[in-house]
Length: 140
Image (cartoon, rainbow, N blue to C red):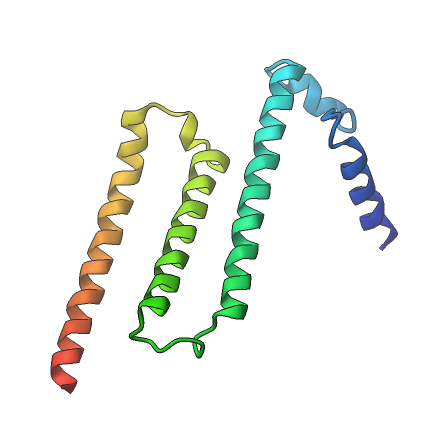
């Protein structure tokens, strides 16, 4: 328990300084200046904060507007589902673009990587809608 408190204390204490003097080998192998390192760490902290806020919002919406709150066919429930889909896509996009470094690549390479996934997701949506319409027509 003491170790975790010590680690969090050091993170909070040094968050404004943005210095990494705890791993000497890491700083010697870096191929950028300290100013660029500060920018990189600030970007990582921002994305981590953003993803945490989005996750907290998703959890709060799930707690306060759960499945029994609205009828399944209502506009409010469909809006909540769409809200979750949009937030999930934003989180996935930030993870891919920042933590997997795809945002730093050329636009053509990004599309080469992302296009198959986009087509696969559209195919899955097509399958779900096709099967749902079949099940609806079969049961009604």
